[in-house]
Amino acid sequence: MNLMHLKYAVEVAKTSSITKAAENLFMGQPNLSRAIHELEDNLGIEIFRRTSKGMIPTPQGEEFLGYARKILAQVDAVEELYRGERTKVQKFSISVPRASYISCAFTEFSKRLNPADSVEIFYKETNSMRAINNILNADYKLGIIRYQADYDGNFKEMLTEKGLGYELISEFKYVLAMSEKSPLAQLDEIHKADLEPFFQVAHADPYVPSLPTTEVQKAELFEGVDKHIFVFERGSQLDLLAGMPQAFMRVSPMPQRILDRFGLVERRCADSEKTYRDVLIFKRGYCFTSLDKAFIDELMHFKRALY
Image (cartoon, rainbow, N blue to C red; front, side, top):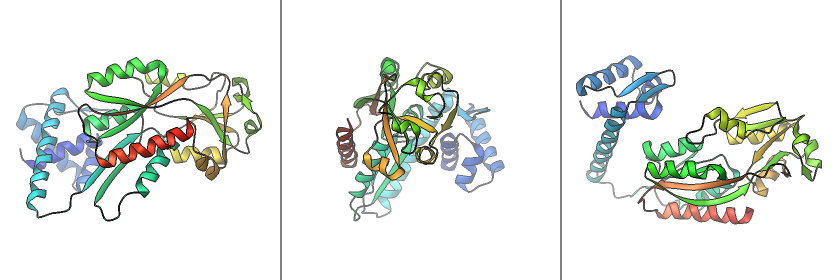
């Protein structure tokens, strides 16, 4: 076993794929697969379970990968120390829901970065499950998860078990977003029956601990609406709403500049009274950096303006 074997295993865990990991490592897939087998034989454990969903770490594999990441981080620290580098790189990393007010806060935060500083910024829009996993397994420092207030107990129990701290960012009710050319835009207040002829745009990957995805997804859809377009990426959702007057989407309240940019309007749905929460998560005991605090300040500014 050597450092390259550790790097190989960590990259496979990161991508859940031998093929993608080989591409990222600029090596042949057969060579990488053989190296992983050699590592497993050397250790006498199965690091990965090969499934239809990709390469999934076994319990022993998760333990090994934790050690591997720490060793590689220490090696990087030693190399940086003796490389003669004097410039300290500031890092910021966060996984967030696909929400426009968070995106706007991130833009303002980025605009205020000092061009003279060396920085590395990672901003990933994803669902709550992946935001949690990114902190636990991918070295992300912060995350924001979104869920129905009814599921507060499910999430807090799971976060506590995984050693994560949490703070409430915002609490809100969804509104409906649609093109300003949509017939729905002419209504001051919308009822479920008004939505039946329209397409509902929705996130494709909702998540609640201990509940099946199909059950959670069903709870996010309007009864009576039988036309759904599931999309992962926020920009695609906004483009779709802007160009498709017969579509609508349940969203957290959006900054006016985003509505204006895409030619959208928001309307309240009288029959939709569920409360949602955006919650900041982090490893328990984590000390917030100056970049973390600057982003949170911008986030709270946009939150106050909307809510």
